[in-house]
Length: 385
Ligand SMILES: Cc1ncc(COP(=O)(O)O)c(C=O)c1O
Image (cartoon, rainbow, N blue to C red; front, side, top):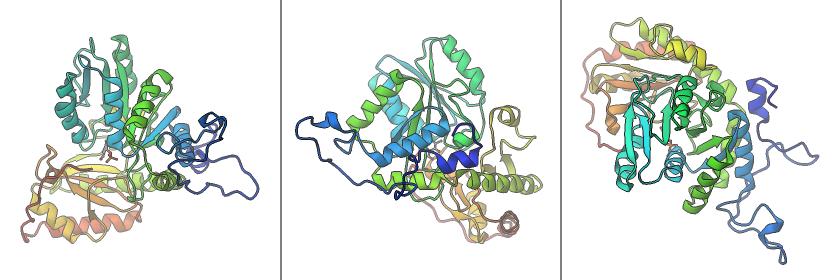
């Protein structure tokens, strides 16, 4: 299917060859153990036990692998995939370089857990400058970074890191494999949360690692089997079913983000707008060359927590929710989760609503939020999406 365009590849990705009487996408196979051949045991079948083996999961892996251009292993969540990759590849005494502005639970994991087992952890901002890669075992990039949406030139970074002997992994959550293919850009591994735009229905958790080297994927697969960080069959099936519409969903999300970026850029009461698809955005020069399409996520600042609450209260089409990439437009004040962002910083994820409806609803909600109203409820700090 590699010779077809995005929409076609998404519809067909990972499907078994057509067979009369069989469904297009076989239903989920729910199994812990499978029947074994009494004489040959597990050698006779690809399915022995559910932790390493599940046919529903394998079809999903074939689908994501096709889109990323590598072999894929799915995990129970994005965090399971990222922490699995880091723990499977890093050893005490190794050095790892992580994004200073990336998904903050990954940063917390690095300083809490990786440093605790003797891994040296360094951070660099996604947009640079980057330190020397000498002595670094693994560089993890996140581009566009969540939630600030800076980008990095993956091909350039990979060439420099490889010259120093470092491996490069790219978190492709925000872009999805239709937005960019890090393996084609020179990365050794892709890692991502499939909870977001990839599956896009806000109804499951998923993660994956993809790559072209068995030497790298084998220890990660072994780690997954040992720790049991696998998605269940029903979630894997739902994810595969959702993949078929990825091209359609992204097209509308990107169009909505573009229209909203135009609206927000024109308002003096909104500051710090970031969307890599805007020619005025600092990320645009790299993003417009590196990315095949722009994300449906943008970020901006409304000044303080109360104004964000008034905005969310007034909006009819913007749900207050964390995560991003779903069918429904959502907005998240990141500081409420303990993310090191300003109190009025908002990450807004465009859904697939009609563009005109969304623009007028958000314009009206921003107007309404300018009037003073009840103070925002103080919230607890919990780490999340
Ligand atoms: C860039 C990025 N990577 C990884 C994750 C973790 O994914 P999950 O929530 O599926 O564990 C997230 C979640 O928001 C994310 O935004």
